[in-house]
Amino acid sequence: MKYRTLGKTGLKVSEIGFGGEWLERHDEDEAVQLVKYAGEKGINIIDCWMPDPKSRDIIGKGMEGHRDKWIVQGHIGSTYQNGQYVRTRDMKFVVPAFEDILKRMKTDYIDLGMIHYVDSQEDWDVCMKTDYISYVHRLHDEGVIKHIGLSTHNPRIAKQAVETGFIEMILFSINPAFDMRPATEDLDSMFEGYDNADFSGIDPERAALYSLCEEKNVGITVMKGFFGGRLFDEKTSPFGVAFTPLKCIHYSLTRPGVSSILCGYDTKEQVDEAVSYENASAEDKDYASVIAHAPLHSYSGQCTYCGHCKPCPVNIDIAMVNKFYDLAVQQPEVPESVSSHYRALGTTASACIGCKSCEGRCPFGVKVSERMKATAQLFGC
Image (cartoon, rainbow, N blue to C red; front, side):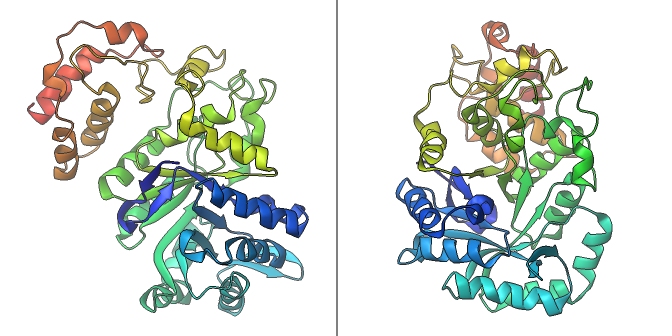
């Protein structure tokens, strides 16, 4: 298992994480063993947005004796009322629901205290201007939550979160289909209009968000990476072609700012399949060719950082150079952090000899040679 630093939290999280929302539908002992098995495979980050007692008990028992090896995303505002999940900012429900996480997970702290599921501007304003946010800050000040995070499906809300300065990481929905859709305050509306949609590449607001997270060192963990399994079947995939789990995982992990993708598991075999990503071939992980040959897309000219351009005869890491170029041009001036990371590559864009061999391998027709010239001019090397 490979591990990445989760932005400014400094936490080292496994590239493959555990999204726990399916645990409730399993026998408790079986589900506890599934959590333990994932830990044995090197997975060390688990998300618990679920308010139901059974799911929380399962995670607590699954971590028992190894709490220090797990990084828990615990959500503040996800409550259980009359046997039902209710998202709320009402403190008479928020406080006992969060305290229940600590009790059922047999811990006195949560690594990532998540401002739970904010998709609308109205809800954002409520969260930021009421006792709810004071409670989050108090938990942080007291060390009950080690870091403050936020979960959202809306890039506009995520951008505001990054700009607060105190939200250190974001749980965000990322997959090839979502990335081509515009921002919405209603997640259900994202599913409208997929049939025969005219995709035009990554939505600019989403691309800008990933760049901003990279620049501000706000880590991203990924939810909905498989689009609920719809991407696995050409009949339900909005591209008209099927992806595999490994291709979806690779897509998420190549987005700027992303540290971990949280997959849902029903079986140990599914854990094994996800973890196999770490030793998978480039062909097994190749999402770019799937998109490029899909009947329903228009992705031409955009670098997706897929790595098809390798190898370069002068050893330029073309995907990373393109990534830093995209990060830089999002800002009025080149951020020093981006410039320093770019220079740390060693071999920069100025080394390009213009052979264009990479362009013949690019699935999306990116004019790499021109981008290398523009990058060298922008960064001065």
